[in-house]
Length: 559
Image (cartoon, rainbow, N blue to C red):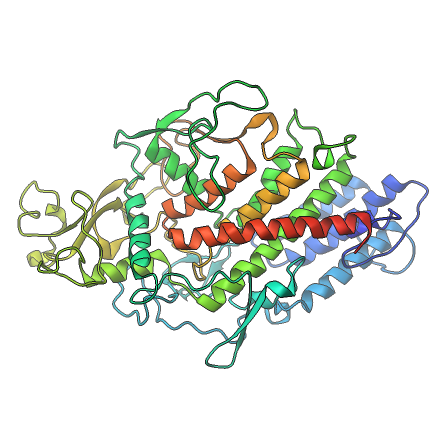
């Protein structure tokens, strides 16, 4: 879309196809060239997607509505349609050779997991070999992040070699190339160094980080009586790489204090986890920020001034330039995050916590089930199952097992998991005492955990990069009107289970606040520990700034 727009501007430069075109009516010619370029790309990219027939039909209908002949496939000549077809063909050809291994269906060329699969439907994690490394999952029913049903069995690591994919603005000086024992090269941009290692550097951070995921799982109960003010007056305004903010005194657009919004904490945390989850049936994490960009651009009080200055920009120019910049930022975020994921190959919470639970407790050296790599005991939240605790009407009575076999195991108060949800439209699993060996993230049972390593968080990287672009492009870190909102209606919004129990409106003063909330949502969802989050935020801040500056060079023709 950018290259088609830029072809009719004597200053701007195309990113893949840099042509100079003329037309009697520039506006109509741009519309036609952009439409053909977008149509060809979309039909190629989504030909094998879920619901492809419906999607392709809608695309064809849109072309017909616009008055374009979608059967016109010529790539030569000066017509806007030919230009659009030519641009799409060049982009698709570029993608086939960009290091993504598209020709072979994006399959991994050399990566192999070190751990045998975890079967989440069965207790514990008895077969794991290295608790510092990623572990694939074997699911009875599996749906990938694009919504594709997959065959029963092990879900492979998605894109561990993506660091070699051609970037938009990543600089070679930020690249480290690592060579594995098998002589395979992993490309890592913005290398954050290794994550915490159990039994190595960062041992305590490893344990406490995953235990924090377990603790936050216990917060997903809307009936526990805990409430929270989730307005921008109480939350957000963090320093980069921290969660130290306590909100803002006033909305800069109105000069008035933000109105408090007090809701059950468990509802807020569940809405967070699902709003930002971006699993099947979603725009995916990078696409989520295009939805937010649309929200900003379409806001009735927003004026489309580039960097907040000068005359309002033509709406098409605004959209194309914003999408181009944002796309460059999230693409580089993917190259960076998945390069790091592939090389460091870090474990996910479901694998780490079940492993630690199998070992036992690390609090009482002289007590039952002691292991220095087990979980810390916390009265009322992480406890041993004992003869006393399984007695009639006691808190662990239901956990005793046949012949009291579970005495000595670890019990935790946490979200109970999908086994307690028969119908997500009316059932709520809730929080209660379960065995740690049966712990699940707050996710669908057909998805459980994204099929790739945790370190670093893609959500954190994408979101901080996108928030940086939105701030720079609009000229303000604040959403229009000083607050962005998303409404989650009572008992309508949640998909994993029924809820929320009250209407919840997510509110963000700034793009950075939204990005930080996205990062935290992954801990509530049981997907990441803090160690995955913060390095992603830090990398995203640099990536977003660099992508923004690179995009500007195309706008002014200096690239």
